[in-house]
Length: 147
Figure 1 (cartoon, rainbow, N blue to C red):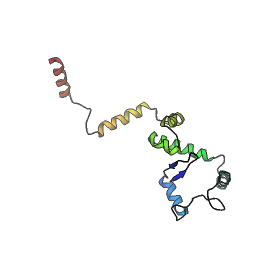
Figure 2 (cartoon, rainbow, N blue to C red):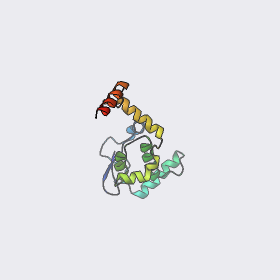
Figure 3 (cartoon, rainbow, N blue to C red):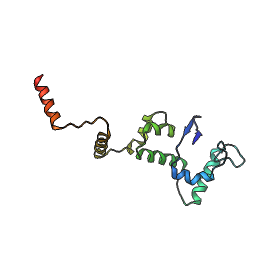
Figure 4 (cartoon, helix red, strand yellow):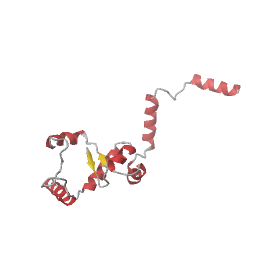
């Protein structure tokens, strides 16, 4: 989905399959139509958007949710799921990956045993193996002794 942002740049935001399946039948048939138009047509002003958002939250029993809260939740879920920060950065409208890391870096996995497991899996699935057998070890010692 692409939107025009406050900076005037188009931003592409992925729609997870469960969300897409839930909403696709409620979207306008015209692919260029506004999903949330103003009551009288045209672009939805922020005040009208906020009122509609809060009313919709109230109707489904959600209290305290803000549009920025959805933005933060999307970023948090994407990063926690292992999304590449360079992909998340433009989705959030951040100027740099450093900005994204500064805001959401605390969500990155700091579990060293998890890193070790990921490295082990990478070694097992890589075409060039980093493992060597005892015979290779003896050859390496002999070569070192000869030098």
